[in-house]
Image 1 (tube, rainbow, N blue to C red):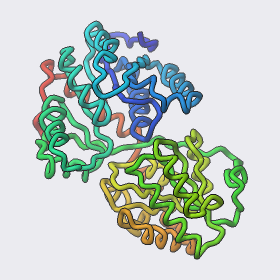
Image 2: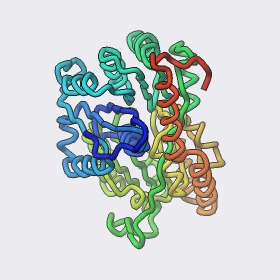
Image 3: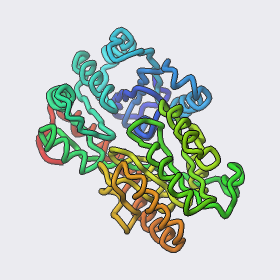
Image 4: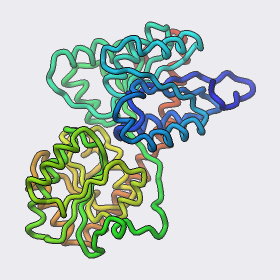
Length: 398
């Protein structure tokens, strides 16, 4: 049971949040941030991690254990499952027992796989409110995905959250999802200050005068860090001392290491692995990069903005909704190493412009993309949906 005391005079709403993994990328981190920050006086909170026994957790065992302790310290009950694959139905039994026994009010699932199961289990266990949350959306054109998104996740949930206006528009135009089924709630982050006096460059053995281009994110195919590595080779010709830093872990690490070796960039490109000190790492960047093929509202981008680092990002997904070109950063086409390298080089050569772009981005982040604002909107959504005891979808535009 949750350790948070029940507020006198009212019954807290029981919310179960579902994610695949605890530590994998920005979406998982944001899901945890949301559930831990739901008002404990109003919400009884449980986090279900369906792939708790996944090998990706074993590779970062200490970080995963620390994260779980933080979650439980916040008064959130933790439920770890041992799901091995998409069709491992039996692994869901502990969650099914919980949903049936405890009169759960809301199931809040995150990303496609968990959304599919969140709808199935929530409806099967007669949970009144089902909310599916899509963190980044890419239209693959596959009929099966369109059918599942439109006819299962959107129609069987009470609300489908999109994190950017671009994502919402594409869900409507390309997948033909009913606009009334989609709720736009932009991502937000909580400001985290860097460690006073820490010199991350010295720790990484990077000269104080060296230009540093950096990126933070899970090493996944869609993040296209291979494009950043190719851009590093181009940058090196004009800036022999340049260093490119990538903080993150994932399945693509081996392929990226081979690419670095093949291009002779072992002394130029540094793969830092998973980091829990991102604000400190960002202090070492002159330019921060997002080079993804598709995105919603990437949390790493919001972290760059908060740090006041000049940004170069691909013009994809929800990024143009956050970064206005030449105002808050520079936007470049996806899969274009030359354009990425040229944009980075232009900022390396112009410290004044870097400072102006970083300051404008920081101001916008703090004004428009705060975690507290996001959580408050999600809380209100839960309350509005639960007010209808039948769990029917709201049919007014949001």
